[in-house]
Image 1 (tube, one colour):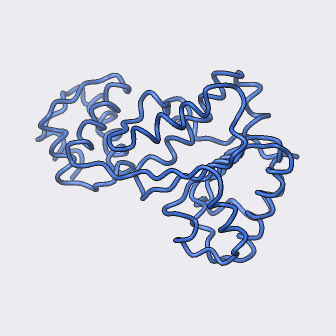
Image 2 (tube, helix red, strand yellow):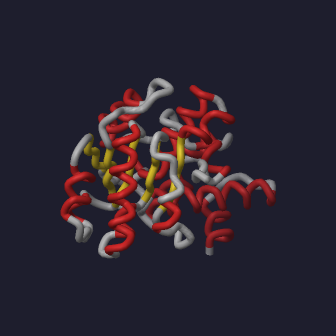
Length: 236
Protein backbone atom coordinates (compact mmCIF):
# COMPACT_ATOMS: atom_id res chain seq x y z
CA UNK A 1 0.00 0.00 0.00
CA UNK A 2 1.46 3.36 -1.00
CA UNK A 3 1.15 6.61 0.93
CA UNK A 4 -1.15 9.06 -0.83
CA UNK A 5 -1.28 12.82 -0.91
CA UNK A 6 -2.14 14.21 2.51
CA UNK A 7 -2.15 17.99 2.25
CA UNK A 8 -4.25 20.08 4.63
CA UNK A 9 -7.45 20.81 2.70
CA UNK A 10 -7.40 24.54 3.43
CA UNK A 11 -3.83 24.91 2.22
CA UNK A 12 -4.42 22.72 -0.82
CA UNK A 13 -7.16 25.09 -1.91
CA UNK A 14 -5.16 28.27 -1.47
CA UNK A 15 -1.44 27.71 -2.04
CA UNK A 16 -0.48 28.60 -5.60
CA UNK A 17 2.58 29.99 -7.30
CA UNK A 18 0.45 33.01 -8.21
CA UNK A 19 -0.29 33.99 -4.60
CA UNK A 20 3.22 33.50 -3.23
CA UNK A 21 4.69 36.90 -2.41
CA UNK A 22 8.22 36.52 -3.71
CA UNK A 23 10.02 39.66 -2.51
CA UNK A 24 13.72 38.76 -2.72
CA UNK A 25 12.83 35.21 -3.82
CA UNK A 26 11.57 35.99 -7.30
CA UNK A 27 14.21 33.88 -9.03
CA UNK A 28 13.42 30.84 -6.88
CA UNK A 29 9.68 31.26 -7.49
CA UNK A 30 10.14 31.54 -11.25
CA UNK A 31 12.51 28.58 -11.35
CA UNK A 32 10.19 26.26 -9.44
CA UNK A 33 7.20 27.36 -11.49
CA UNK A 34 9.06 26.60 -14.73
CA UNK A 35 10.32 23.25 -13.44
CA UNK A 36 6.75 22.12 -12.76
CA UNK A 37 4.97 23.59 -15.78
CA UNK A 38 4.02 20.18 -17.19
CA UNK A 39 2.54 16.96 -15.83
CA UNK A 40 6.02 15.48 -15.38
CA UNK A 41 8.76 16.42 -12.93
CA UNK A 42 12.48 17.24 -13.07
CA UNK A 43 14.82 14.25 -12.94
CA UNK A 44 17.23 16.20 -10.75
CA UNK A 45 16.42 16.23 -7.02
CA UNK A 46 15.44 19.61 -5.59
CA UNK A 47 16.34 20.94 -2.14
CA UNK A 48 14.64 24.07 -0.80
CA UNK A 49 16.15 25.74 2.27
CA UNK A 50 14.85 28.61 4.36
CA UNK A 51 14.00 29.66 7.89
CA UNK A 52 10.53 29.16 9.38
CA UNK A 53 7.92 31.32 7.71
CA UNK A 54 9.83 31.97 4.49
CA UNK A 55 7.32 29.98 2.43
CA UNK A 56 8.80 26.51 1.97
CA UNK A 57 5.56 24.66 2.66
CA UNK A 58 3.59 27.07 0.47
CA UNK A 59 5.83 26.26 -2.48
CA UNK A 60 5.59 22.51 -1.90
CA UNK A 61 1.80 22.84 -1.78
CA UNK A 62 1.92 25.00 -4.92
CA UNK A 63 3.79 22.23 -6.73
CA UNK A 64 1.11 19.75 -5.63
CA UNK A 65 -1.68 22.05 -6.77
CA UNK A 66 0.03 22.65 -10.11
CA UNK A 67 0.29 18.92 -10.71
CA UNK A 68 -3.34 18.47 -9.69
CA UNK A 69 -4.44 21.11 -12.19
CA UNK A 70 -2.45 19.40 -14.94
CA UNK A 71 -3.48 15.82 -14.20
CA UNK A 72 -6.78 16.01 -12.31
CA UNK A 73 -7.62 15.26 -8.68
CA UNK A 74 -8.09 11.54 -9.17
CA UNK A 75 -4.76 11.04 -10.90
CA UNK A 76 -2.66 13.28 -8.66
CA UNK A 77 -2.98 10.99 -5.63
CA UNK A 78 -1.37 8.24 -7.67
CA UNK A 79 1.47 10.44 -8.86
CA UNK A 80 2.42 12.47 -5.82
CA UNK A 81 3.00 12.00 -2.10
CA UNK A 82 3.55 14.63 0.59
CA UNK A 83 4.84 14.16 4.11
CA UNK A 84 5.80 16.76 6.71
CA UNK A 85 8.60 15.23 8.76
CA UNK A 86 7.82 17.75 11.52
CA UNK A 87 4.58 15.80 12.08
CA UNK A 88 5.25 13.43 14.98
CA UNK A 89 2.92 10.83 13.44
CA UNK A 90 5.26 10.39 10.47
CA UNK A 91 7.65 7.49 10.99
CA UNK A 92 10.59 5.94 9.18
CA UNK A 93 8.35 2.97 8.40
CA UNK A 94 5.91 5.27 6.64
CA UNK A 95 8.58 6.25 4.14
CA UNK A 96 8.81 2.62 3.10
CA UNK A 97 5.18 2.79 1.91
CA UNK A 98 5.81 5.62 -0.55
CA UNK A 99 5.73 4.67 -4.22
CA UNK A 100 9.18 5.41 -5.64
CA UNK A 101 7.94 6.30 -9.14
CA UNK A 102 5.97 9.28 -7.81
CA UNK A 103 6.92 12.86 -7.12
CA UNK A 104 7.86 12.80 -3.44
CA UNK A 105 7.46 16.04 -1.47
CA UNK A 106 9.14 16.01 1.94
CA UNK A 107 8.70 19.02 4.21
CA UNK A 108 11.03 19.86 7.13
CA UNK A 109 13.60 17.11 6.56
CA UNK A 110 15.90 18.91 9.02
CA UNK A 111 13.69 17.64 11.87
CA UNK A 112 15.06 14.15 11.30
CA UNK A 113 18.71 15.21 11.38
CA UNK A 114 20.69 13.42 14.08
CA UNK A 115 18.39 10.39 14.29
CA UNK A 116 20.34 7.65 12.55
CA UNK A 117 17.36 5.36 11.88
CA UNK A 118 15.38 8.20 10.35
CA UNK A 119 18.35 9.33 8.28
CA UNK A 120 18.80 5.80 6.96
CA UNK A 121 15.12 5.72 5.99
CA UNK A 122 15.51 9.04 4.16
CA UNK A 123 18.57 7.76 2.33
CA UNK A 124 16.84 4.52 1.36
CA UNK A 125 13.83 6.42 0.03
CA UNK A 126 16.05 8.75 -1.98
CA UNK A 127 17.83 5.80 -3.59
CA UNK A 128 14.52 4.10 -4.42
CA UNK A 129 13.11 7.26 -5.98
CA UNK A 130 16.19 7.81 -8.13
CA UNK A 131 16.19 4.21 -9.38
CA UNK A 132 12.48 4.32 -10.21
CA UNK A 133 12.60 7.65 -12.04
CA UNK A 134 10.52 9.45 -9.45
CA UNK A 135 10.80 13.10 -8.47
CA UNK A 136 12.24 14.52 -5.25
CA UNK A 137 11.52 17.89 -3.64
CA UNK A 138 12.58 18.37 -0.02
CA UNK A 139 12.51 21.41 2.25
CA UNK A 140 14.72 22.20 5.22
CA UNK A 141 15.54 25.03 7.60
CA UNK A 142 19.06 25.19 6.13
CA UNK A 143 21.34 23.40 3.70
CA UNK A 144 21.82 19.66 4.16
CA UNK A 145 25.35 20.06 5.50
CA UNK A 146 24.28 22.62 8.11
CA UNK A 147 21.43 20.97 10.03
CA UNK A 148 23.21 18.09 11.76
CA UNK A 149 22.77 15.07 9.51
CA UNK A 150 25.16 12.28 10.48
CA UNK A 151 25.15 10.16 7.32
CA UNK A 152 27.70 11.52 4.82
CA UNK A 153 25.94 9.75 1.94
CA UNK A 154 22.63 11.39 2.85
CA UNK A 155 24.25 14.82 3.01
CA UNK A 156 25.83 14.17 -0.37
CA UNK A 157 22.52 13.13 -1.96
CA UNK A 158 20.55 16.02 -0.50
CA UNK A 159 23.26 18.46 -1.57
CA UNK A 160 23.20 17.25 -5.16
CA UNK A 161 20.77 18.41 -7.78
CA UNK A 162 19.05 21.79 -7.70
CA UNK A 163 19.52 23.93 -4.60
CA UNK A 164 17.31 26.90 -3.71
CA UNK A 165 17.31 29.17 -0.67
CA UNK A 166 14.45 31.38 0.49
CA UNK A 167 15.38 34.69 2.10
CA UNK A 168 13.19 36.33 4.77
CA UNK A 169 11.04 39.31 3.83
CA UNK A 170 11.66 42.85 5.00
CA UNK A 171 9.03 44.62 7.11
CA UNK A 172 7.55 46.38 4.09
CA UNK A 173 7.53 43.11 2.14
CA UNK A 174 5.74 41.34 4.99
CA UNK A 175 3.07 44.01 4.85
CA UNK A 176 2.63 43.53 1.11
CA UNK A 177 2.50 39.76 1.58
CA UNK A 178 -0.31 40.15 4.13
CA UNK A 179 -2.26 42.39 1.76
CA UNK A 180 -1.85 39.85 -1.03
CA UNK A 181 -3.04 37.01 1.19
CA UNK A 182 -6.03 39.10 2.29
CA UNK A 183 -7.00 39.80 -1.32
CA UNK A 184 -6.88 36.10 -2.12
CA UNK A 185 -9.13 35.47 0.89
CA UNK A 186 -11.60 37.94 -0.57
CA UNK A 187 -11.19 41.01 1.62
CA UNK A 188 -9.21 44.22 1.69
CA UNK A 189 -7.16 45.41 4.64
CA UNK A 190 -5.84 48.95 4.92
CA UNK A 191 -2.30 50.04 5.69
CA UNK A 192 -2.76 50.86 9.38
CA UNK A 193 -4.02 47.44 10.57
CA UNK A 194 -1.39 45.67 8.47
CA UNK A 195 1.38 47.77 9.95
CA UNK A 196 0.05 47.07 13.44
CA UNK A 197 0.17 43.30 12.82
CA UNK A 198 3.71 43.40 11.47
CA UNK A 199 5.08 45.64 14.22
CA UNK A 200 3.43 44.00 17.23
CA UNK A 201 3.34 40.29 16.46
CA UNK A 202 5.59 37.46 15.31
CA UNK A 203 7.80 38.33 12.39
CA UNK A 204 7.66 35.05 10.48
CA UNK A 205 5.01 34.89 7.78
CA UNK A 206 3.56 31.58 8.96
CA UNK A 207 2.51 33.18 12.26
CA UNK A 208 1.34 36.39 10.59
CA UNK A 209 -0.83 34.46 8.13
CA UNK A 210 -2.41 32.57 11.03
CA UNK A 211 -3.21 35.91 12.68
CA UNK A 212 -4.68 37.16 9.42
CA UNK A 213 -6.92 34.11 9.24
CA UNK A 214 -8.09 34.62 12.84
CA UNK A 215 -8.73 38.28 12.10
CA UNK A 216 -10.75 37.43 8.99
CA UNK A 217 -12.94 34.97 10.90
CA UNK A 218 -13.52 37.35 13.81
CA UNK A 219 -14.42 40.33 11.63
CA UNK A 220 -16.90 38.21 9.68
CA UNK A 221 -18.50 36.97 12.89
CA UNK A 222 -18.73 40.47 14.33
CA UNK A 223 -19.71 42.14 11.07
CA UNK A 224 -17.10 44.85 11.62
CA UNK A 225 -14.38 46.41 9.52
CA UNK A 226 -10.72 45.70 10.17
CA UNK A 227 -9.39 48.48 12.39
CA UNK A 228 -6.52 48.70 14.86
CA UNK A 229 -8.85 48.98 17.90
CA UNK A 230 -10.73 45.88 16.75
CA UNK A 231 -7.45 44.03 16.21
CA UNK A 232 -6.38 44.89 19.75
CA UNK A 233 -9.69 43.57 21.01
CA UNK A 234 -9.66 40.23 19.19
CA UNK A 235 -5.94 39.48 19.36
CA UNK A 236 -5.27 40.48 22.96
